[in-house]
Length: 266
Image (cartoon, rainbow, N blue to C red; front, top):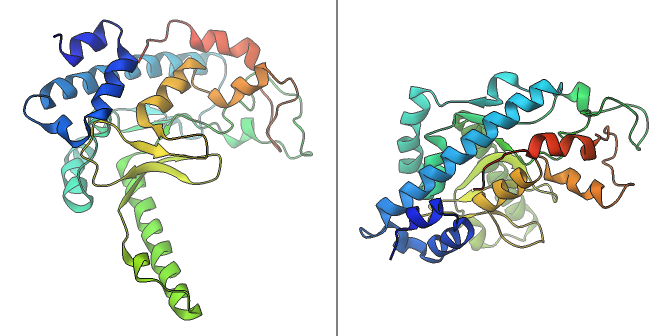
């Protein structure tokens, strides 16, 4: 039987991914781990090519990144060293996430507020075609230092919640059973942070469920690339009245084909 890596390279992307996920912790067995890591590296390599294309095309059409220096960059030496520290303190990272942070220091396609937000009324105002494109961004994977800052804030909120519960008489010892959460930087439609519960010994893991089912890391990126990096605006192709309050509305019908062109299957 062909290896997972060979099958993935031959186009069985979805099937291979689902099979590796179904293995659970067994994906780290001696018989599978090397093959699984090769698939993860190939996935990240294809993502890198896609992201480089999108980054260049967005600049060409006048898209302004909220943080240009962090829009797409390699990891620093200290960030690579940090991976082992994070796993030691918070638990094992899923195979795909480790491969991701060994390749990317930061991937942040959020749009500048000047191009995204408008001050006049709830409904969208007229602007250049690219204005508003970055609403509800899917491609946001902040650097490790930023993730660690978010972990600190989440921990503080958990402590405050427990103290409030004790003070007001609804405390339950189960509240103390806190699982470390590793935030990626993005947010779901119900305003929950995207990220992984650690430790996670599997190949890939669920990064959120906002009511539409479990969303795995790779599935999120697949869907993003399908729509040129900005899946939120795919709804506007079916509903001409679709918009995001207090933000510009892009000409997605015009922009999407430019961004989608020649993106690799992941």
